[in-house]
Image 1 (cartoon, rainbow, N blue to C red):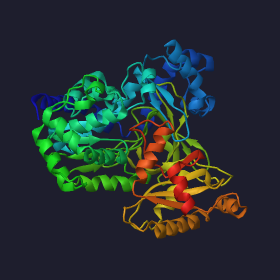
Image 2 (spheres, rainbow, N blue to C red):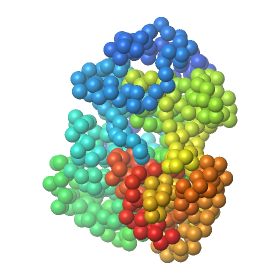
Image 3 (spheres, rainbow, N blue to C red):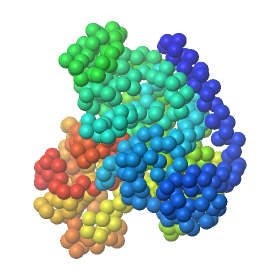
Image 4 (cartoon, rainbow, N blue to C red):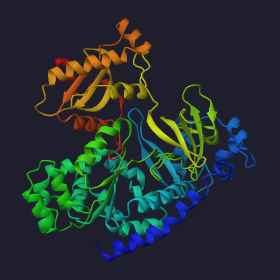
Length: 542
């Protein structure tokens, strides 16, 4: 590890420590902090054109704010955000817009979230507390280089970002970002490569060349597994590039990015048979200390797979982060509310009541509402959390799953229902990818199909029949699904097992407009229109 990396860690550790101390110092003042955060937001919103149009006042109390402004979603803000982008003026809130961050879901078009100066300050608050606690929990990772994932955007979308990179570290303040770049294993300019494949190849080359790699942060564990699998698939080309220190035929597409050189990594790749093997990754990255990725709900089995390949490293879950804001983050082994960042309210998942965070009770299932420095007000997330024992007065949470559901014919299947179904299955060694709702499951009738990944030598017919039967029985316990089946509106549940099912799923997500690196395994998906050809063929056989 170089002197710059060591110095970067030393300075960054000192710079983020005050954020952790602020978080700890005010754990017993939840209501006071949250009311102060609302007062700051109201003052900035009241000065904005949109705030004035809506009659927002800086002197509103929490109770008045909750009464006067409705719960919202992206569609409620979309027109104003579009005008902001066109006029380059901050309309939603009185804070300069630094950039627009794209995000998309399985059924939604791309959404552009304004990252204002105020919003970035809110994110920096939680980032400081998290990174400082990370140094405290895993001191060894402060001696190696770090990889923070990039979410590569399609070429046509890059033109809409005015040159901004979809880079996790862009949410840091400029000082912390400067120091963090000193610790990086891969340069951010990787995102400027001509295609996502070239970006991925460059990323893997830089990571493979770095024997001092100490920390890997990716959002989805399937993305982390994909890095390891592509390392295997490209091992011969990577070995040549790292031996020579040039990209070969890819050079014209690499936007001037230098190619790393490592005789050590080239030799290891040349000697490797390509089978994913923890012993090989231990040789390649002997100093790897921490992996950070989603590890709850549908991501859990894939997180275990990633951990199994990199056993030399500790594992830390992500908490609940979204492009629109942060709700929880890992801290002292818990997932507390990021109460120093945004303004938070919570909708009871059972009766719809909206409560302030200081009124939550342990065991309650809730849906977060965020009011943030981007100008979004009482913005309803699509996630369900369970309230756990507090840290001081600050509630901690467990992520249960997404709240957005599927209603093909009135069956009202929720993501949490799908996750509960998947959790009780005897998967016989297979890995669940998603419960897929299809407009045309078999023939022209809609229905549900469980997608699982299996080994190449698995007897697929027996596995598919057994899992389909388990899924159908579990779903029939839900009144609306059973009624739809009794009325002949839905086909019986099916199961499709393929050795590379995850690749098919991820490819379809990309084709349907999702952004590389942001794609994650979900317990429930709805793919409108005809099923992909590979699935149609498999469904016709079950």
